[in-house]
Length: 317
Image (cartoon, rainbow, N blue to C red; front, side, top):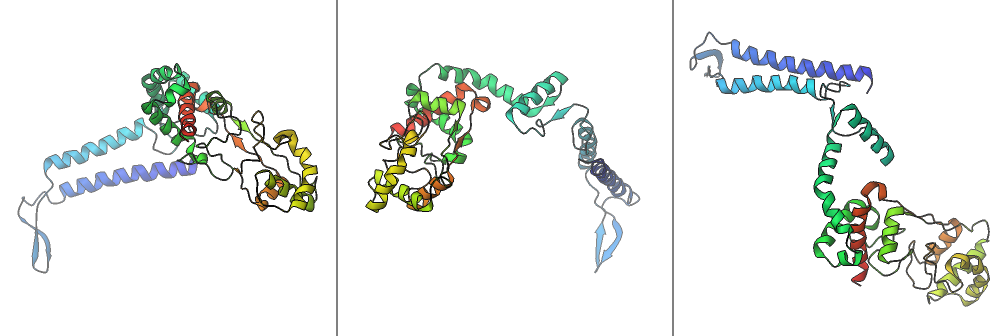
């Protein structure tokens, strides 16, 4: 915040509080010469106003709130750029990454500042940390069969994974369905946990400058034929020769390679759409899917619990 706007907020806030004090004193002293219940100087349409001052306890409450307002503004941030005498803040402001957040947290603790969010995280870790440590000592398969643990895993999933994979974990265009048995990098407990810890970086190269539009169409027909789709047999046969480039990742039979995340092209399950137009778009422009790593965000113990939830989803099929 610039100095101008900081000063503007300070002046307006203090002026507002001073105005409240003036208004309260004016109402308390303006008609002290008239006894309670006696007529005042106001009359309208034959109706005379009777002096009925505020109860004393109500007036005292007004003064208490005003005094507390000044105390609060002195102790906590609220007056422009003034940070408050306690050094309190709700969170580390301006951080743009987990690394910056960790550095800001360490700096605040070293300086003795009170960061509310950091304290709540520490309190939560003290309470729930041992619980997650106990979960981490059990196998993912065992946790997947525990209904209570699955509920915890579901909540963690909704907070961290549902933005891409959906609240039902069935994904969408470009985001894998986690409830079936089709896995890009493997659906074993170890593979799922590895994905969550380290993330994944998919890379389907673009062939728009390698093949002509006709060759792209022929190759798309051949890819479609691998999953038993009806295609132009002549174009599919012509595209088979160029599939040799694709086989380096997807295999000669097109069944994919989970070691590098190359999809199976024979099961008719498509991450970006299985129409000829969608496949041609993929061949022309390539695809670059990114699964973020959560080790710095959640820690291995919580990832262990989420892994059990995700693993259990596919085992229900």
